[in-house]
Length: 143
Image (cartoon, rainbow, N blue to C red):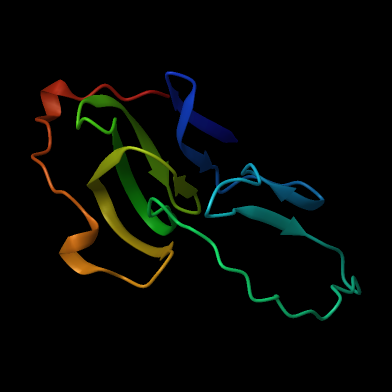
């Protein structure tokens, strides 16, 4: 239900199955990450106290993003910071992924609908370095 994609003891991503189901609040991320991801399941009548978030200056070094796959099937290809291919994983309808470190690319295997959530402000092409994807014959999908 939860896949941690690790390379050299560094977490590159976390995939949460659309079937994940746990009562209460469950955080998938460590406190030091600049993007936090949690799942919440509460019964009817549960009160979540009103609150505001205090202003805090945070230093964000890398953009981290969350993708919520509403429909379809998507292959996610992981690369290290040197653009070297690591491995691939398949996402299905309802799955969520947090992309934490390294590079990533995608291949749409079935028509998709998804949300992307990441820190801003968006810097356009100044925010990323693009490189060539691998051929399908070079891909190794991890189950």
